[in-house]
Every structure is written in C-alpha cells, then in structure tokens.
Image (cartoon, rainbow, N blue to C red; front, top):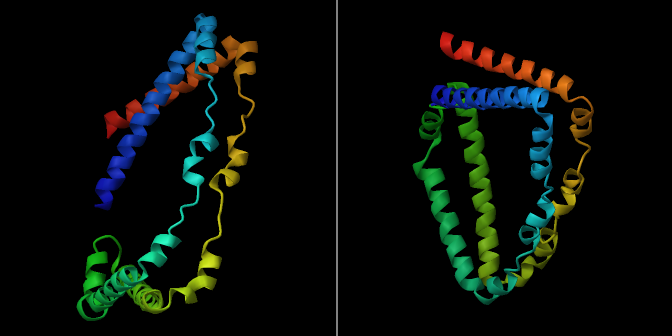
Length: 204
C-alpha cells in the first residue's frame, strides 16, 4: 500500500514537473521572440480573486441549540446508544491484538502496537465522557450551559487568512524591463527540468 502510494505521488510529481518545465520553456522562448504577446496574455490572466469573499458563507455560525433542547431526549438516547455500542466493541470485541494486527499492515509492529494501545485508551475515555454528556442531555440539558458557553466561541477563518489575502508585488515589472534576460533564464530552467525528468523516466 505504501509503495503504491509513494509510486503514485512520484508519478504525479514527475508529470507536474514536466508540465511546469515545458511551460517555462515555452514562456521563456515567447519572451525572447514575442514578449508583447506574453504581456497581453499576462494582463488578461492577472485577475485578483479574494478567498475571503469565497469563505464568507462558510464563516457564519450555525445554531443547533434550539433543535437540541427541543429534542434533547431523542438526542440523549441516540448518543447513549452510540457510546454504549462503541464501548462494547472497544472493550469486548476489538481487543489490542486485533487492532495491532490491522495497523501492522501500515506500520512496523512496535509502532502499530503503540498506536493501537493509545488509540484504544483514547476512544474508551472519549466514549465514557460521551456517556456522561448523553445522560446529562437526556435528564437535565441545562446543566451543560457552562460547557456550551465555553464551546460556542467563534473563530473566524477569514480573519486568520486576512494576511494571506493581500496582493503581493509580482515579477511582472522585472519581466517587462528585461524580457529577453528573463526569457533566457526561464528557457534554460525549463529545458533543464524537462531534460532531467525525461532522463529520469527513460532510465527508470
């Protein structure tokens, strides 16, 4: 599985690198022989798209408290059944050796054993906590007000990404001032990448 995955990643990397090298070679030759056409295409492609505007609808809080309190008995029963079933599987059905055997297909045996023990302990503890939460939701949901106030904090992804969503100075002025120099550098770099990847694929 890991060998197949690494092979797929390596193949994708080679094809992306080959495409990038060809693009650099063609762009470099175009800058040398017909730079005005390259600059016209560049002007049409230089359109700024704000990711913050695209994320606006994702950054709105979703209120589920009313639905939860309206159907707190049903939600509590479902959570209770789910937590009990998961604990039954973890404690009685899926023991350490079975989980280690499953994970040993992806990791070495000592690492798989450590992950299996840690994962099992974490899941058991999480489901025990889920039992108490489910019982509280079923019997007295208002007791979770403090936990809700702590958990209902809003973190704006748009605010965190504000610094990434500012246009930066591009290399266009340098290319406009020195089209043949930049074109020569791009053509040489693109040709080197194409030849290196092509040689690697032929040898491999």
